[in-house]
Each structure stands twice: as C-alpha cells, then as structure tokens.
Image (cartoon, rainbow, N blue to C red; front, side, top):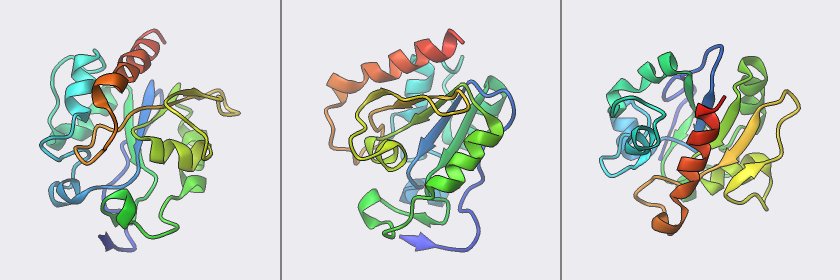
Length: 170
C-alpha cells in the first residue's frame, strides 16, 4: 500500500458522460502503470469491448481515450493504493465522489465492485440497480473484474451486459 497527498491518478471526467465507472483504489499493477485497471488479468477493458461500450479493445495505457466515448473513470480512494483489505480505514471519500457526480451529472454511475457500491450506497447494496441519485444519475453495482475478486464471475458477468444495454440505450 502507498499513500501521498496528490492523486495517484487523475480522474477521467467531463461533461455529457453516459457512464462513470468508479473503482475502489488502484491496485499494484495499476499504480505501477499509472493506468486504470492495468493488471493483465483484469477483465475491465475486455468487458467494455465485449459489451459494446467501446468499439475496439482498449488497453490500460489508453484509458484517457474513453472520455471521447462518454465514459468516465474515477476511484473512491485517490490517495492510497492496494487491495481493498490493505487500504486505510477511512480511505473511501464518498463526499468527494458525490461532489464529482453532482458536478458532471453522468447518466449512470457504475461501481466496479460490491465493496465500492456498498461504501457509497450502504452496506446492503447488492449487484444491480440502486436508488437513483437526487440529480437523476442512475447507480449500478457491478461484479469486480479484478483477478483478486473471489466472486463467481460466470454467474455474475451478465450484470456488465445489463449495464451496457442501459448505457447504450441512453
């Protein structure tokens, strides 16, 4: 785990976003690459392409290009890195994420893990749609694409398709 006073990686946010993907924090591979979802076995980038959210397969080093497709990227923890169980106790800055979502007002905020979704939506949040935010942003909790996630990927990956269909229909 590492910590600093500056963001470990900049957000990819702007106006007119169809979806913002929010992770928990950078893992070791992402920190080393200075790129989102950079572990070679992370399923994030392949899932974006497989579900039709990106027209081609993006590589982690290309992460900033998703903004051109109306896709944003951020994390709940911008100052520390590591697996969720290695992060400082109060690592998740829900207020900062709320302010970003209020400012940019994406159509959908998608958490890329139950851990992130529960930190933001409450401890009972499960996979799928959550209550919309006051500004109208819809919220979805996805199964983690991290290779360290212990969830049953084959049984939960359909959530990525459900989210993508909703995003593509907007």
